[in-house]
Image 1: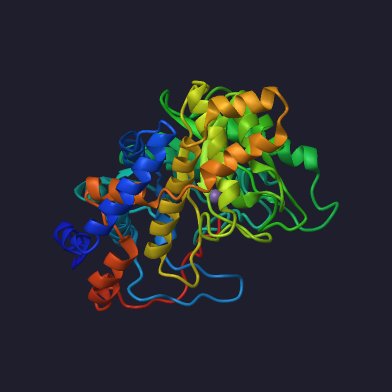
Image 2: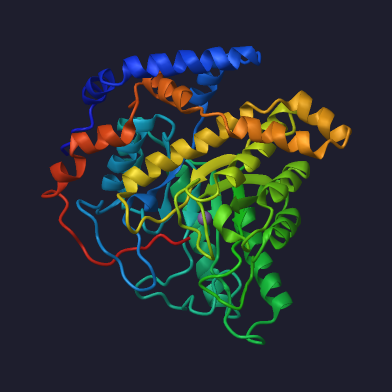
Length: 430
Ligand SMILES: [Mn+2]
C-alpha cells in the first residue's frame, strides 16, 4: 500500500513547530515548577498513556437515515489496521486495536495478527456482535440473542461469543466484551426477570469457556436498538450480572450509554470501590447518542472521570487497571482525524487530573470547604497541558501537530484508487 505518513515526513513537519513548542513548554514548565510539579515527569506520563482504537471506528459511520461514504474508506480488516497504524504513528498513544466479530473475521486470523504486528500494533478486547443476523442463520436475533426466548437463537449467540474468544486467542487478546442489543419496544412485550435469567444462563456458558487468563467485560446501554427496555440497561444491572458471574467478569462504562445528566464519575468511583471497573468506551454525547468525539462537548465531565481514576491510582485501589478505548462513530469527519483528536482529548483529561493537588483537595473535603474543593479541581482543569502533549508526541516520534501533518501528507488522496467508494457497511453504532 501507499502510505505518505512516514516517520521521515512527520519529522520534516515537526521542524516547523519545534521552536514554538520549546518556548511554550519552557513557560509551562516554569509555571508548574512554582507548584512543585515536574513537567518532565508529566511528559513521561503522557508518553506512557495508552488508549485503544476500535476497528469499526476507522470506517465512516452513518445514521438511521443515511450514510455518506468518505474518500478511500477501509475495505476490510487489513485496510482498517493500516488506518489504525496511521493514527498511532501521528499520536503515539494508540498501539492497540479492538476488533469486532464477525466483521473482522478472515479465514486465517494469523494473517491479521501479523499485519498488525508489522505496524507495531497489537489487540485489545474482542467484541462480539449478536445484534444482526448472518446470512443463512438458522434462528434470527430479531427478538434478541443471549436472552432470546428461543433456545436455538441463544445457542447461536453463545457459540458466536465462544468463537470470538478463539479468534481473540489467535490475535493475542485476553478480553471479551459483550454488548447485546436485546430488549423490547412495547411495555409487556418481554418479561423483565425471565429475560435477564435467560441472559445470565447464556453468559454462564460463555464465562465457563473463558481461558484462565481471560476476562469478560459487560457493556450496558440504556436504549437502542430497543426503545422501551433493554436487558442490560444500566450500570446497576451490569454490576449485578458481573457479581453473579464471578471474578473474571467486570463492568464496562461507555460514556454515551447513560441517561442524560447522569453522574458518570460517581458510577466510576463505585465500580472502583467494589473492584468491578472493566474500563471505558470513550465518546461524547448530547441527547441520546453515543457517537460524538471524546471531549468535544463535555470535557469537564471527562476530566472528572479521570479525577476518579487518578485518585484510585494514588490510593493504589486497583486490582486490575481499567482498559481505555474509544468508541465513536464519525459521520461528518475523516475518522482518522476524529480518532487522533479524541485520543489526544482523553490523554488531556488524564494529564489535567494528574495536576490536581490531592493533599489540598482532601483537606478541603475533610473541612467541608466546598468552594475551595471545587476550585482545586478547576485549577487543574484550566491548565493548558497542550505543550506537554506535543512534547510527548515529539519524544515518541509522533507529530507535534497531527492533523496538520496528516492533511499535508495527503493519505486519503494517495489511496483513492486502491480503495474505491462502496455503499453500505456497518455503521458502528455500538
Ligand atoms: Mn461501546
